[in-house]
Image 1: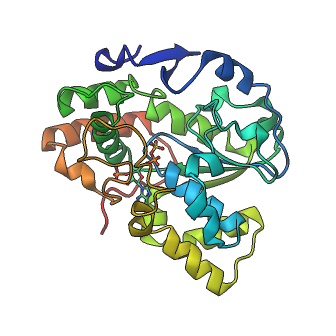
Image 2: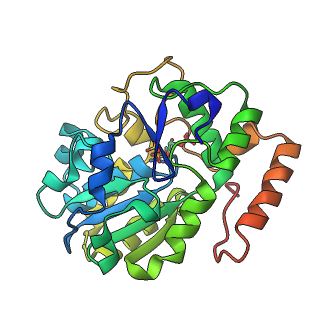
Length: 286
Ligand code: PPS
């Protein structure tokens, strides 16, 4: 069920919450049959985990550091969302790059045959909750939540865009052996952008010389992306001027909104729901 604050803005398809003004049922129904090519690259994220960052990183790796690509074309055109019908990724020339927030069960079945490459980027879910809360207060296509306390309950219950964070990461990770799969975290990209970009290049079989790598790293910093109109999504309609898609770009911002009690409650649920998950999340920048 969609959250009460969001019920007018969302619709459900196969148990997942989509956005009325952005997604279309007919398009979602077709995704299962999408053809996936050997050269396709799909960055998978739960919302607010580093999607637009991956759009920038992939664009620059594949353009071999050619800045004109990220200066002349909007990110969503270069590296579109698979589930969004405008800028259909199927129409792109190969190698096709795309991002998706789709849960595992809704992806093209071709992808499970091992076609294409999947990069899953996760982020600590407390920072995701805070980022999503601010995002809902910023964009016009989602309802502003009332209090953070109520929003956090909805987030934990999966009554937000794309459903439960817990289900998203567990389902993708449990099926990772079906894909050419690279698992990354927002926090590792943040802590060492250069090393992570090199790791992504290795996974994709792309080589960047040191000079090109310098350019890619520079252009993918929070600062550079924030002032790049083709990467910062400032063109999107917003409720106010205070927010941004590129809001803070830090690790540990959850501390500004979570109370001690909310944090302890979240930790308890996290431990139950993520029991046995073989990955250590990073909760602060130290
Ligand atoms: S969306 O709307 O779901 O596609 O959002 P998504 O891109 O997944 O996540 C947005 C958050 O990622 C941060 N971001 C970055 N952080 C550091 N460096 C760079 N270059 C960068 N690019 C995007 C962005 O600021 C959002 O996080 P918050 O915490 O809200 O700042």
